Every structure is written in C-alpha cells, then in structure tokens.
Length: 436
Image 1 (cartoon, helix red, strand yellow):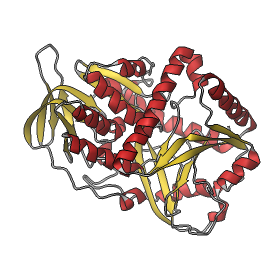
Image 2 (cartoon, one colour):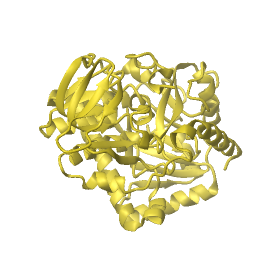
Image 3 (tube, one colour):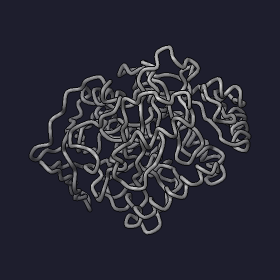
Image 4 (cartoon, one colour):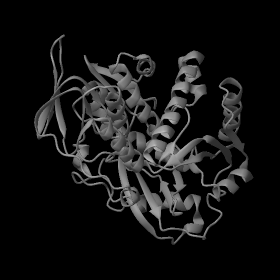
C-alpha cells in the first residue's frame, strides 16, 4: 500500500482545522523534464523544508520534491507541540547511552526549540508557551517530580514546574489525572502555518520547490564522479547529494531506513469555538500531553477551539468516522463537553522507531536521511533539516551525534511491520485502557 495515496487525494490538504485556517500559499510547480542541482531534497515537511532553507542560505543550488503540497503530511496535521528534550527522557538516555551523550542530545533538543522559535518569528507564526504533562498514576507523578529536580540540578533547566493533583486540575480544567508538571520552556503553535512559513523562507532564499512531484526511485551514485538521479513521475533531478525527508511516507525508496521506521496513524478533532463557555478549560492556554502509550494531546487555538488528538486504529486506512474514534478519549478528560459539536476530524501518518528515538542514517554514499520522530517532530524534524544541511556543508558533528544513537530494525524488517503494528497497537491500547 502506498501511504501517499491511501487516505488522501493528490495535491489536497486534508479537511483539517489547520487547512481551513492556514495562511494562503500559492501552489509551487511540478518537476517537469530533467534538471540539475547540488542537492535534491525528498519530502516537503519540516525536515525537508528546513534542509532546503538552510542549504539555500548557505549558497547551495537545491531542489525540493514533494509528492503533494508542502506541509501535507505529519508536519501539517500534528498537535503543534514544540516539546523539550528528545522523545525519550534524559534518565532513559543516561541509562542507555551515558551521561555525556544524554547531555549532548539534550543540548541538541534545546537548539531544536530555539530554531523553531526563530523560524516561527521570522515567518510570522505566533507561538505560545507551556506544555503540561498529565500523569495517570502516583508512580508517574513521583517520576515527574524527580525529573523536574534532575533537569534543574544536572541540566540547568529550571522551567519545569511540578503540579500536584489540585494544581494540575486547575491548569487543565479536568480532574482526570493525579498530577504532573508543566514545562514553560516548551511551546505550541499552528503546525501547518509553520511548515508554510518555512516554505516561504526557503523559496525566498532561492530553493526550487516542486509540488505534486512524487519520487518513486533513486539511482544512487556509487563511486566518485557519479551523479545521483532522483526519478519522479513527471521528470527527474540529477544531483550531487540527496536528502531523504519523507518520514512515514518514504515507502520503498530507502529499504534500510524502512526496516527501522514504522508508519502509524493518529487522529485529531476540533470543537466549535467555546467562547466564554467552559472557562475552566486551559485557562493559561497551555498545551497538554498525557502519559498513555497512545498519547492524548490537546490545546486551544486562538478562537478557543479545543484541538484534541488521541485514539488508535490497527490498519493504515483511516476510519470513515474519525470523530467517533477520538471523541471517547476527549470526553474521558472533559465530560462537560458532552454534546459539543466537533467541526473537524482528520487523520495523519507519522513514523516511530523501536526505541522512539529518531533514525538518522546515511543510506547510500552522498545520501542523508532523518525520520522516525515518534511524535516529537515539530522541533526535532526542523532541527534534523538543519543538521543535514550542515552535514552537506561538511559540518556533520550534530548529524553524527544523532546518527550514533542506535535504532534497531523492527523484527522481520519492513515485511513484518504491518502485522507488528496490529499486534503492538492492540496490546498497548489494552494497557492504556487498564491504566498501566
């Protein structure tokens, strides 16, 4: 199954609230015939757009190829949360990779947040501070308290504020959780407008962006002096180097990456504007994510619509009634919204790895790839683009630090990812329902 076309029409954004409220951007042309450049970038989400922007600003001749529209995939459909750190917390990183590496990865993640803030400011995309983390058990609350102290004492990061049950309930407008924390150094924004804003900046810097240009095959250079050929449905691009930034949509063009990165679907709904009703919900305009394996995450937009993501399915096809998948999760947190009209419901495809750390790799000579951001991609995918651009320019320290984090292949590789998705999501969905 080609996930690029399994659930969406070519060249159309999904019927999301983000697509309805996006800042308009004229369509870029298709790739037609043969062209040449220094670097071809495959994928027009955060990673690809950031790579194209930084390459163009560095003086490289760059062409970006996107099968649909820029920001079409997970970059334009997600919860809009710009989280701190890596997908795995620093205690996990310290245990598995050592304190020095954990600190290096933390610093890179701080760079990622700063980069998103800088690009959002440059592109005129508003950004709001604060992400709360809602715990479901006392043991998770204890861990949150320890991590806040650990980050302050060992990492010099004092922006995480512990929340007991009552404090968190006041912050969320819900008593569904037993405590947690709020990270005032994290943030949230309109994710599609961030992608479109970076596209405008890349275009202005001289990057050639080609939409509706599906890359189906790459002929990699195998020896010095050879060129890489990127084959599209409507033409081809001959280049010195290629950057793969397709994440869950890469398909078969990078088998070694595909064995380590599994696409999954997630779903989001948006309510009608709440106005002055339910003033208790998110009174400080923070975003929220809870500790379920299949995470619930939510925030208010500037029109006081509640944007709520959650729920899972065990097939790659989106359900016909997405709202019915997400609504029970929303009402479990906010039962007072029973009967509230849901105006939008959409699905999206992201990608995970076995250990939930992103997969940075060199699939072939003169080829860089970053994918598998595991729900932490607003910041890390944007940074990944800059790190790949830096590596092309000969400054590969950041890319190599991320590539050194091991990401094992899924058992059975790409062939068994589908059955594993069914088994794994069913198991963890059961654990979530039982409260583990």
